[in-house]
Structures are given as structure tokens and as C-alpha cells.
Figure 1 (spheres, rainbow over the protein chains, first blue to last red):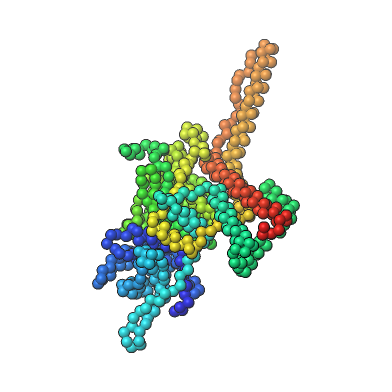
Figure 2 (figure 1 turned 180 degrees about the vertical axis):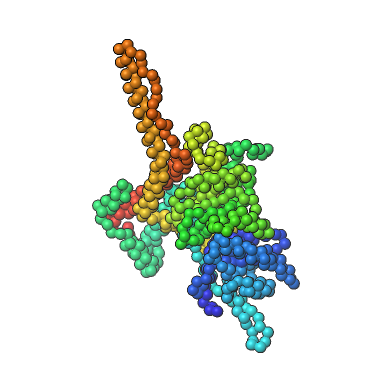
Length: 249
Length: 331
């Protein structure tokens, strides 16, 4: 199996994992579940997931695999293209039980290399980080073999509508009640315009700084500014007025 | 604080808004966009959540498979909800959602489904998500319920006719009641969002700045034209009734004139008969009148909104151009 595998994860998956973690029963320290997605050249795209109840103690591990296969079938009815591509667990690190769970999944999933995704919901380092692993057998030939989880690069991808949804959701961070009401179209637009205005202010402040010698000029930034200013299509005033008026009509 | 009795379909229930979890919103977006190759408009699913005192919370959702033969909707729903219980997902279904590109969601089917939902669960509502508009930069998620009059209208499951419409005083304006939608995220999800904001910087909504107005307007106008075609039967009926009215009055007048002339001559007046006026059959189903009318109203409103934005954008860019020949670039 090639190790230049990249895992692309959609933000919806992370949302679901966090939500399932919040709803877990009292006695569980972490939750696990199945990842669904599609395979592509040199990578896996994870688009959906669902939580699978399980119970683990120091000695034993119990996963409801029939639940997992029923849930998978239901999901197949809605999205026939999504296949099982791996499994996820919350928590900062890979544990011993993970090996067992991983073997379960590699037998179940009709995929050669199941991906193991961890999302650190308890924020051991003060940050919620996510990592993906695939398993490689290791060991001395002839001796006891073992498996090693080797990390794989994870990339977050989202298409434009998901980005819009996320941007709207981002605003809930700033309110006490953690709520946010999406504004009407026109106010969303004015919000975007205000953003642009702020950015232009930054840029002009920078340019002023460079001109007056207080800020260090940076050649790359200067070149990019030049590109940007030149990208305004050069149209004469009359041409533009004509276009504007015809569009209005 | 006694909770009001919910019997009798009281329409001004104390629900003021709908609160959607970020998760449910993301799942709706994902489902409605997933088959980009088959942009069918009927991506539907169920919303799960809770009913609190003055708001409806939606905490999760799941999509429905498209109705192909062999897929039993009820069983799918039951199975899914049964499976979601062990993972502690709220299992009360509070409504359903549907995707509708560019706002074309009003249909008989929608009315019937919503009516069924509202019969069983008083406060249920439908969320309409517009994938096209959202991809263009503005999240479009709206919640609707049927008004009491609309419920009565659809309950009969028959064809609408004039009497029903007149009695219930329902027109396309008061079929639906819109509810405010609020998005909510828990603390942990907010932490996740903070992480995500580093990956996807919260910068401009570039799509919202797009100047291309023609395609969107074309699409809307085409939809309005389709709607007008559907209403043609109704229009014909209207024209015919009006014509018939005119003829009746004209006939009446001629009669009167003739009678007056006869009286002047001393002859008995002609009997007053109304001949040959077949009553024109109104189209059996006045559904187009109300439904399509509502649909067209929505299109028009969208065009209005869109045009105001487009004009604003054009004027902005105009100012950009006015500056460039006069002042040297870059200050």
C-alpha cells in the first residue's frame, strides 16, 4: 500500500464526531464509529460518518458490529456511492484496543487500507486536533509481528456551500447564547463589503507605511499589490456606463 | 406558567423561532449537494429534535432515500430512528427538510406532506434549503408551516374549488407561515470551529461578489414562464367567465331596450328568459391558481432581492472605475 496517501475530510464529519461525543453515555470515555467516503487516486475522501456503540474496559472490547452493518445499509440506500473507508475514535492517541478495532474494520470493510481518524475532543494539548493513521505490519520476519499505526497527512476540504454554512456557523462563537441568526441577503452582502473595506484599509495603511519609511517594504507583497491593482479591467468610463445601464435594464 | 393546550390546531402557538444545530445544517447542506451529477430537486430528509417552550430545536437530521420502488419510506424511517437511539440522538421527529433550487418548492406534494406532518405533530415544520443560492454565497435556509386555513384546505385531499377558497379566505399569501431560523452550536463545536477557522480563513464571501447577473435572472425568468404556462388553464377560465359576463349584460341591456320599445308600442313585453348561457365549467382543480401563484410570488421576490444586490455591486465597481483614470493608481 502506498504511503503517499492523503486523507481528505469534510468538516461535516468532524461536526458529527463532536456531536456524537457530546451525546455519549456517562460511562464511556471515548466513542468510535465508521467513516464513509470514496476512494480516489492517491487518497481517500471522507464525507460522512456514524457512531457505533461499543464498550471497552481494560481487558475486553465489545463492538456492536450488527448495528454498524445495519446503519451502513441504511446509509447505502441514500448514498450508494459512499463506502466504508475506515473508522474514527475520539481521544488524543491510539490505544491498544485500537489495534483490535482496526482489525475488525479491515475484515469488514471491503477496502484494502482502512483509515483510522482520531479527533482529540478532550483537547489534551489545549487544542482539538485530528490525525489519520493507516496500519502497517511490522516486526522481524519469523518473529512476532505487530502492527504500527503510521500517520497520514489529513487535508480538510469543503465545497462552496459547506464553506458558506461554516462561515455562518462561525458567528455563534461570538454570542453569549451561542446562537446566531442568519441575516437577510442584503445584510450578508453588506457584511462582505465591509470585510473588503477593512482589507483595503489594511493595505493602504501598509502602503502608507512603506512610503513614509516606517514599514519594511517586502518585494513579494509589492508585486502582489501590483497584480491586484492591474487586474481591474481597464475600461473607459463610457464603456463601463454603457454596460452598467444595459445590465440595469 | 401553564402551557397552552394544543388542541384545535391553534395557529398562533407560542413557537417563535426554530433553532438549528450547526450539525444539522451541515448535514442538510451535505445531503443536498452530494449527487452533484443528478441535481434532482427532491433531496428530502427528516429533522430530529425537541420542542421547548417557545422554540423548536433541531439537533440532528437524516436523509431519505429517493423514492425508488422497493424502498419503503416508513420502514426506513423506523429503522433509522431505532438505530439512532443507542447513540443518544433525539428521536422525536419535529419536521422535515427539502431542497429546492432557486426557490421552486411549492407543490401539491409539499402541501400534502406538510399537512400529514402537522396532523400528527402539531408544531412540525418544513425547512427549505436552496443549494443554488447558498453556493452563490448567502445561506438560504427557511422554515415554514402551514397556516390553519391552509391545513383545512389540504385536508380534504380533493381538488380545490372556489367555494373552499372563498370560505376559508385562503390565497397564496396566507398559505405559509414563516418562522425565524437561529443557528446554535455547543461549546465543543465552537472549539472545533475555532480550529477549522484556521484552515478555512473566515475571509470574504467571494461568491457574493460575483457580478454575473444574467444567468441567475435568466433562470428565474424561465421558471416564471413555466409557471405562467401552468396557469394558462386558469387564465382561460377567467377570460371566458369575463366574456360571458359581458355578453350577459349586453343581452340584458338589449332586452331592456326592446321591452321599453314594446311598451311604447303597447305590446306585451317579451318573457324574460335567459337563453343559451351555458355555465362555464371552472377548471376542476384550482390548485394551479393558488400554488403556482404562490410560487410565482416567491420567484418575483427573489428576483427583487437579487436585483437590489446586483445593482449595489455594479455601483460599487462603477466607483472603482471612476477613480482610475483620474488618480494615479495606488494613491
